[in-house]
Amino acid sequence: MGVSSDGLLVFGFPIGEEDEMPEFLGDCDDMDDFIAGPWKSGGDHKARQALIDACPADLTVYCSYDYSMYVLAVRGTEARAARGDAVEISPEHLAVAPEKIAAFQAWCEENGIEYHEPKWLLCSMYG
Image (tube, rainbow, N blue to C red; front, side, top):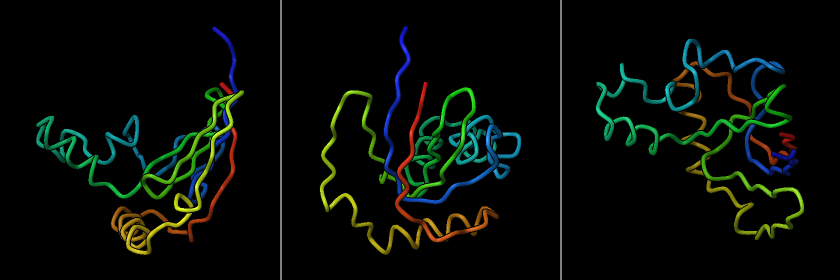
């Protein structure tokens, strides 16, 4: 098993402290549990997946798996290039629809997450 470094381009804002899960997750183990844990979906797998799919936010991990840092991002804006690969980013990918940004902001506010204006962030992931 080797070590790899990836490049990440994501539209969002940094959240949380280095090497700590973001506070808004509370007792949840990951973003999917926060979005649609059994208490929100009634334990139904299809209902859980529908809640996850409808969420306008993604939690992107960067830095390294051992010392993780996080970006809360507008869903669907992450672009990743694995070590040794060149990935073309089209200008269309960089255009984020205002309604997606508005839905992201509303979701943050509904969930008690301090909202910051999202920006394009270039990050790395070493793992």
